[in-house]
Length: 318
Ligand code: PMT
Image (cartoon, helix red, strand yellow):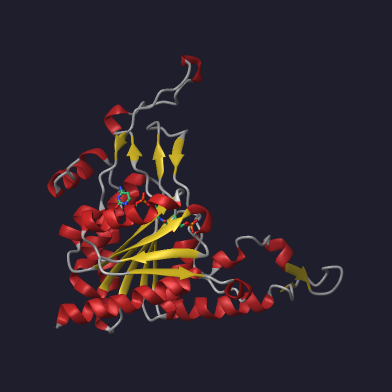
């Protein structure tokens, strides 16, 4: 089936997806952030992270969610900042976050203890077992904060995600090829238009629920062709069937004409991805030794893409 025309996607976005009230304010913030860092000679990456939420009722009790912990996005943000990038982190509210993600499996009260045995002093110290990791993360967190290298922006629903991504693309268009889009979020392909959504909670007393959902416009089209045409754009492709993964990644490149697709399979995504470009196909794999040494696959992905971005910028200038 033919891709809908860009103008029709833009129109659909305006008509069928409610824009968050702060979208213009956020757009100005992102534009100022991008211009400040580009002027200082830094590249800027917009990372999307986490899953989108699609409401089934306008006074929402129930919703459909997309799978994603936000680990890929949060982890990648850290490696991009280590590589000298400034990061706009467009993430799902309460999904994993750079630096604090390391402690997401720790119960905070287990990480702390009273100084002295009975707690009478009221002083609390960090447990020796977690202290080295906390010190490392805290140091980097403060460096990033002092350098204002991270601009976090939150979304919850699909509508918020779509409008904020459009705003980000427009905000970053002023820095041209210095901008990278790293679209790691898991975005719903289906939604119920506001005009067809029941206002109140769907009643189970009415019997089994039959849902009819519309297709979400593929936002990559206008992003690449219209909103940020000079930027370096990376999409992700997640499949559960490895046999169709690379074909789907290639098809995405053919359709949207962007720079690369990071292809991954649900079960192996933490140890194996393929970076597919129109000319190349690079497998990135963690060995058992890497895993033992706590190497993360995002370090390899970011290293691959920052080099490709460098070349892309040189070609644009030359
Ligand atoms: O967060 P984790 O638990 O660490 O997991 C990371 C991940 C598996 C979610 C991540 O690595 C990943 O693969 N994300 C993409 C998930 C996906 O399958 O996306 P998609 O096939 O629905 O979309 C493909 C691309 O098109 C995505 O880059 C998406 O940003 C983009 N898209 C999607 C829908 C839409 N309406 N417009 C879009 O542009």
